[in-house]
Amino acid sequence: MGVRRDLKRAQQRTDLAARARIELVRDESGTVREVRTAPLAPRGPGGGIAGIPFTNAQEAPDAVVLRRRENGTWHRVTAAAFAHEVTAVAKGLIAAGLEPGGRVAVMSRTRYEWTVLDFAIWAAGGQVVPVYATSSAEQVEWIVRDSGARFVVAETAGNAGTVAAGTAGHSEPPRVWRLDAQALDELVALGRDVPDEEVTKRRTALTPDTVATICYTSGTTGRPKGCVLTHAHLYAEAANTVELLHPVFKEVTGQVASTLLFLPLAHILGRTLQIACLLARIELGHCPSVKPDELRPMLKEFRPTFLVGVPYLFEKIHDTGRATAERLGRGASFDRADRIGVRFGEAYLNKFLGTGKGPGIGLYAAWALYDLLVYRRIRKELGGRMRYAISGGSPLDRNLGLFFYAAGIVVYEGYGLTETTAAATIVPPLRPRPGTVGLPVPGTAVRIADDGEVLVRGGVVFGGYWNNPAATDAALTDGWFATGDLGSLDGDGYLTITGRKKDILITSGGKNVSPAVLEDRLRSRPPIGQCLVVGDRRPFVAALITLDPEAVAHWLSVRKLPADTPMSDVVRDPRMRADVQRAVDYANEAVSRAESIRAFALVEGEFTEENGLLTPSLKVKRQAVASAYAEQVEALYGG
Image (cartoon, rainbow, N blue to C red; front, side, top):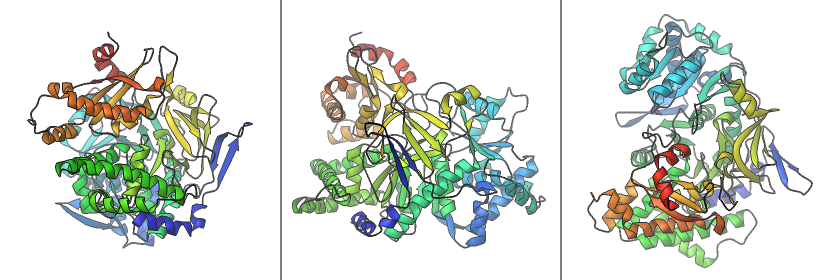
């Protein structure tokens, strides 16, 4: 198995593992309260990150830095060609009236043109304001007005219509271009008479402290706030993660790195990933959808060596594997493979970390059998070349991570927020520790406050909220950003996130319950779609649960029930409730009896971004769900 070979090679390269220097700060009892990691990259250069495409073009003009999909075919884009396109679009923006420091909003799904626009806006001296393609007219109105963006690039006619509706009342509505109406060609034509030297002058005038982007939080509660991120923030994130990860993966695997970006580029994780890839000249492709049925064919075409995703993706791949096995009459075999994979992954990692003997002969034999029957199918679903993945956004179920390890893919977890320019911590590549979100990104420090809140400080921490000094003062104290998340540090400084501070439930019996632990484990098991754990000021913990549509279709098919069976019948079916109860039991294994889910309600429909119950980054809007399903919650408690 490739990953096991990688880890054996890694043991011979301890210099790679020790590249990032760690400092631990303990309290009087010996508990680690703070961990600091020394930076691996210098502070951002003059000219900011706008210079990356031009440095690539100068140093390696023929290097393939991107792949662009057109008419079903992937076309290679060299460093020289990309820099030329960035310059041409930047000239068009200058001709359109973009001034240094001016702002351009981009409202689009993930696609090649967004990467061009990001660097073109920076090269023209501007600032990028990302907008989710699914944003409402009201959201667009607020972001455009608050940021002061005078220009908007929208992907589709529908997006452009949303911008027009949202900004109709503005005294000066923004100028809008459409990507599906050849926006880049229009900009290139517009800028033909602008000299290249004007672009060079503008981008070289940038400094590390120049504002690069204003990213609006997805807003699980309240109005989104604009996080101000400079070129130094973006460079610190990209350069330090590249220096931490890329030399290790390249040395240990011998592969030429490539990845398919499918995360929304309106989300900071997707943005920093594309910057990091261009900085390291890692081949980058784009996929506009995170929906598994649309993403899987693209993965098979592109065949990435690593991925950056969210737990939802890995949960769906696992569920699809099980569903496929059931259709072949091998559901029980998949379940055994799942259990064997967790045991094997645990044992092998313990051996690698020096805390155990490793798998015995019998466990090795069982793993080899299920590698033929199950695990290789998982690798095939991901393109066949993938050895590593990074998961962020929310905690990944530990057993799910071990299962993927047994399948030949190490999933490293990271943790961060928009305010920390994406990852604030990440599991080091040669020191995996499933169940944690790792150590601070080089140049970053993490501290646990007296109340358990996670505080972050360093080069990746933002400078404040746009036009909102009160919120800035509340979030930043002496350079430390209060994340709102609860966590703990182990004896080696690895961070574990235990929940959101504001989401803690206190039962009427006085028990504090973090819903995140239960919800993350619930979502990792079919047929669960989304869920919300409730119980604040109630006698016990309960849950609202939706069913995943694909899992329901599979469930009906296996039982030879009509595909059009009403959902009202499905949620009442004792067999479905028994399957859900098994998922609930699995979630309850992680908590005490007082914290466990005692009752659940299966609700029809889904929590989606479209119905206002999920954020664009797939986080549940807790207040919105609780309000929408208030009657079902009351019924759980006999109301």
